[in-house]
Image (cartoon, rainbow, N blue to C red; front, side, top):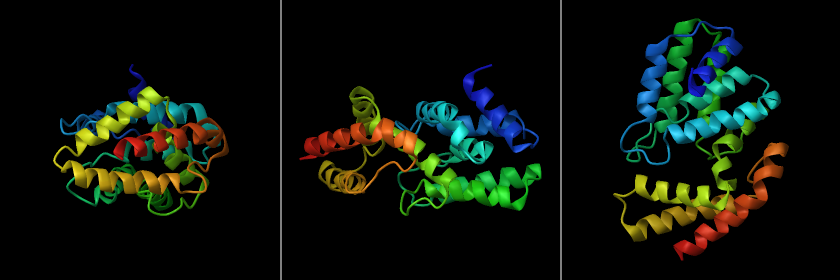
Length: 206
């Protein structure tokens, strides 16, 4: 059994809900493997789930965090602005169909919406999930540079000058935060390297 399958089954076991079946999982995997993706791919999903595996003891509801990671970029189209909302809605429909309690479905949807990174995370699980989603910022320089290129490739349709302006805004936004990572163990691991990576990427943008 591949690690992604183990993660999928464990998430539903942690939730104490029946696995909705291979069709749902395979539909998600197909989404993550869409040809227009360059960063928001199975590589990113695998990295996120692996990092959760290292830090799952810090989750209040580990199954909910895992499932939110599975769905957080399930819908991804650079031309639309409701990717997270649509991904959260999909997760909610799957959870509702399995008979999940309304509060479980609501928390998972909120976790996914937290990956918009527009407002501070509201709960410890949201902070953990957001930090996992952003961990690539604190990756080793080679992986960070790969990620930086992958983002540019995903936005290949955007003119270079426009991309540089918009990308610079995003990176400066992260760098200007008092702290990028709110979970102490992830902050110790990634904060310093992330700031160095972001500064280097901004210098490249000019």
